[in-house]
Amino acid sequence: MDNLKKKWLEEKGPYFCLDWVNKMEDDMLEEVTIMTPTKYEGSLAYPYLDFQPMVYTIEDFLAFAPKGKLHTSTDSILFS
Image 1 (cartoon, rainbow, N blue to C red):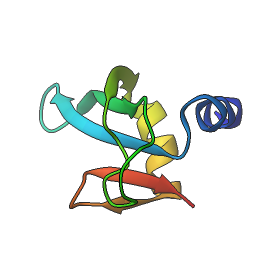
Image 2: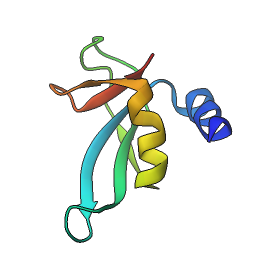
Image 3: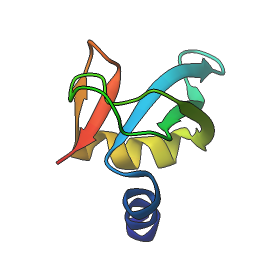
Image 4: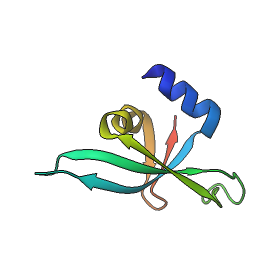
């Protein structure tokens, strides 16, 4: 998992947007689609102009989420 995070930060940078969460049954999360920014332009609050969706299992997503800060206004996470 550490290698996955390192690879993500090297290739994608510290930001990603949560597009939607697919729920299986009884609120069990199966996978998330993450909108990955492909351009880092604009203000700090809105640094993305273009997005590429990527699907990860919820286990992979949760490996990132607790280590980041969730900004609900933009549904983005900045790794700290």
